[in-house]
Image (tube, rainbow, N blue to C red; front, side, top):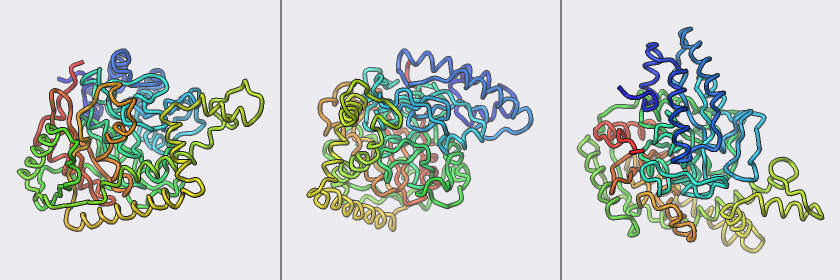
Length: 486
């Protein structure tokens, strides 16, 4: 039998419901594992052990009363840019190092309603700006498959915690691949929902037209469970879609007959690792064996501009969103100054890290007089073309299959001096956010002991189809069952 911390969400739920284990026992086992991981992998900024045990006791009372929902008593970790009432929410930045929100994000309210247990807040790239979790102001999280390598980013702490059994599941956020890329790097499942499927209320804003909260789990079944819990309309988020939430677990079947899957040629780029491409071709062959028809002629030519579009739009929105951190209202404030303007300048100089400052400057430049039309406006026009291209592709295909990342996890420090190479880590994931569509990353193999992820992209609100494809592939392989040798 699995040790308790090795259980999936649905396995643990079954044992809790049958009273074979208690939430206290489960939570203590996972906390012990998480504390052990802190020395080796550093997944968390804050661990809330006392709160978790309190919530576990409450969960056991609910279960005893016959009110055991799918997440009741389940220990989860939360990315540290999601507001948690009474718990420090730092965004892994000096700017918010001591910030304790007075309210919960909508996703947290939903998890509390389910009776979930909150283990703590996970490390991330500062303000979600990065692809490696090396941009945290506090420490770098390591990849549990090889602690000399990055776990991906910006949700690297969540990915590492789940991959190494330090949480049964986690929430991440995805602005340009920040759920899917670390999921691929750490051999777990990660879903970026359709823009508007999950409320952004209480998510610390990076780029408001791109950000989405989503689940990071050990397998596709858990992903479906967690997505159902957090999805739905929220009147406090004006971009939230007023659509009913299906039971995503009902779409989990192993038959792919009748599904048309496209393979866009632009995602198999020259710079991709040959071994990653080979692993993807093997995965596509397996999907074909499961009954799907494969269309190798799909083309998304504007994909080549997605990186440039993203690095104009996202920094522009960040420049506006991060203007609120001025040392006056809340957060870090530099005191030893001569004037209010000096205080503002010094607060931002010492409160933000280098990558955040780089993106603020990029965005401010793109929005400035004389350059707005040449950069920001043109990027918005190309964004429309990218979105239209996806819509056209989905007229002939139910979903598109690509690598999650063109490479396996890279060494810590390998790309920190070359921002462009770091940005290219997200070349396969960025277009999804630009178009607002959903995408799922599932484990698809290993190269020299390092994980490879497969990305499944679909039209707006097609999460059920993506989960069906991911589940069928997962059940026909054993990649998701492998655990890092920590």
